[in-house]
Length: 279
Image (cartoon, rainbow, N blue to C red; front, side):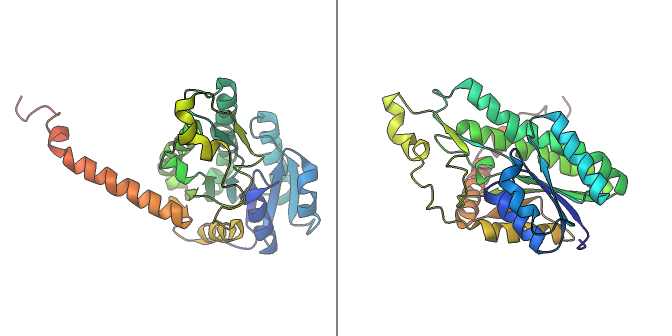
């Protein structure tokens, strides 16, 4: 990836998006930074107006998505890396979740991501190169109490990204899922919605999640995450999945070790479910 590579990063007002925007700008790339409120990213543009463009963007609004892509092409002429970072959290037991709020989260975390992806793919396909980087979560691999609907959005992102990676590989377009554990961002702070538990049986189980007790104490460093994402974008053979954080690594390995053990235990049942030879 050359220094002339053009990045579009969604959700640059806080967290991963902001740190990644700062890191890519400092590295000398051409960067389109986006947020729903331009004021929140004005300082990013002031660093280098020639190589940085700020665009107002709500990923759930198709007209704004189209405008962001059009503005990128008008200023820089190409799109090399799309980072789908915009997203929100939601904390509640599954039984108590408010459907309107969980649907709104799906609109951002899944459909917003797909709006951006489908908008840039024609141009990446035409230039026969590109990299779509989707910020998923360890919660897209491992499920936890109190964030079931958030898990569901990230599982959806995981599934469609894996399929997409196979569809666009012939065009030299890469897809990478970033799967962080707890990082010191606003994900569990102002960027998250909560439905307080009123069912006593759930309170003890989900209260650490719903009450945001770990907010501000997370072990993950967003600056190091930004460095890792840039390294992936520079790789000749980027991975489909990149775990970030010690917890992400250990939780994922434990999950798939247990899953493989379960598959092996059920092997005979699985194989016997097919028609037998000659019948």
